[in-house]
Length: 379
Image (tube, rainbow, N blue to C red; front, side, top):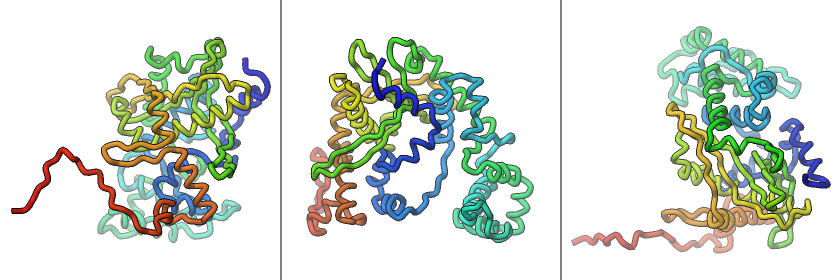
């Protein structure tokens, strides 16, 4: 067994997730946002502007699967008992129709007009008119009056909206979505490809939901407090190997490479590797080998494909750390992005990259041409 403060870390895993989220530190989601939209990073984490927290079906399934396998350790009864910690069940079927979009928008408008004491500051009629206005902008209820929209709401959406209002702070799911998530979770835990990932055989230490608070030291000496919560961490003390693992769900798990780049899972792999390396050095495990991240990927499609394990190689980890390009598209590595966040903090530059500022706004056009393609000339 790991000695010393490891027991403290293991105890922390049993605490509510809010403890981890309450830590004021840089995490991987923040870095991804900075990479994509530095201004939104600035608005959310410097100005304190709240983001719209909406999740699609795929992310909700992923949350349920995580909760089932990692929080409840695959125990059906525990999952049943703890389900309402994070979720609420809508007893009917939630469709994709415009009335459900209206309900989600109405909830958004209602929360915007709710004070710190939980009091709604506007009348329902005013809230509804604003929600109707917003969904019309999205192309819903085209040509319909507010009265007609209200009729549809009362007929087909009121029960769903009331479920949302009664369960603010929880994810509302319907029965079909819950059944699908259960199936994905059970396949992950039972399939011979992946079942050993989620087993705690006693010989290899098994830590689900493993939180690490750590320090990144920048090139200029600045120290940035970071936090990472690994889905799974396995430690083989006999071989002195640490295995970080992450659980994913996707519609087509045999096409995971596309999602790996699209969602910048490479940054997650590199960021978590730095976290584990820091933690290991603090816990007397500095000589242990830290394997590159392995992604355990469940399939959410109607095909119910078998789960797949995607193991990163050392080259993948190196590129995720230092940057790479694919088909001419440049991907910044995790070190570059952390350094750029530190630079933006110091200089208060959030609307232009360090590269643009350093070049005084003059950049060289750098197009990756296909050299094998013949040049077309006009006659």
